[in-house]
Image (cartoon, rainbow, N blue to C red; front, side, top):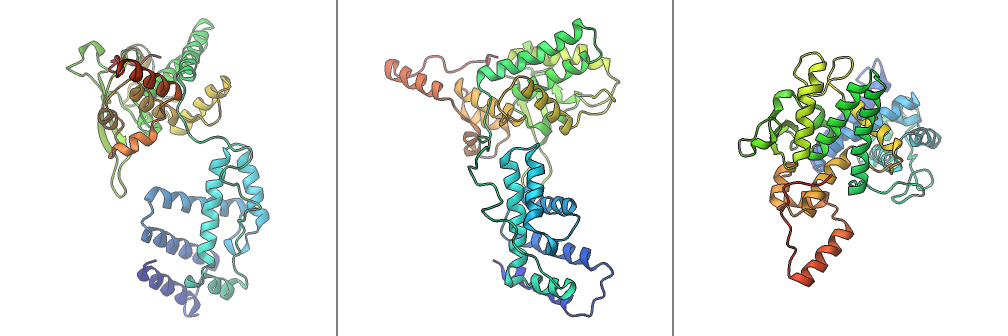
Length: 370
């Protein structure tokens, strides 16, 4: 641990202990200073900005839940919070939040930082470690869902068929939700067919859908200009162009732009809500969960499963790893391979083909089947 971090933290704690500082709201001042020093400590460990922000937010969420401060937190508070969270979230997500709380308390209790002395000075008490093996979720705890994974091809086909069926039922019933159902179907297809992250698909504008001069048969939807890609730490969004590789997806997106989108008010956003606002990521997630649960698909499938499926299916269909890496916006090819989950059936078939014929014959497919 860097000496500069210890020195800075010691300077802050000793300032609070000196008695020369009058705190109008000591609880808020101590918590704010402790959190700031904790963030600096995490930065010194070269943790990612996303992880640091998640840790910081987790502590604030728990503080809001308890309506109290870390030096008054109890194991019962954590257990009540965890039980409430488990009612609507996967166990893995709750475990991550518990870990953030445990690490923050571990930082406060570390003698090198003197936060226990600060708390004793101002509040007559100090934090205790409320996270233990008895009240936190284990790595492979009972009832925990499996880790993230892509759709199987059968699951993906069922999901997209379900989207189309929702549109057709709404149209036949002449219900108001037909437009929204058509929009949602196009959004889900777009996320899968171009391998996008949830944020990337929700932030698309009409001008981001462009022709590819080399593939005129795709019409306007020859490529997507993704302007809100995941950037490196300390940098803004990373932009990339994602080429269209699935003819059926180009047809679906073109139809949405030509038929459905004009039914909403003019504006830059590609996906518009019933209130004429850009569809939010939370709304997108809610609709995905509604469809997934309606099909009784496994709970570990999230919107990010579309992106995992895209990468996996392209690799299974023989697309070059470097091409898939560029399409996905990964800096390193190793990241792309981590995202891929080539199925056991595909591996077995490929091995059999290699043993029988020397190598698979049909590796380059321009179209990934639904």
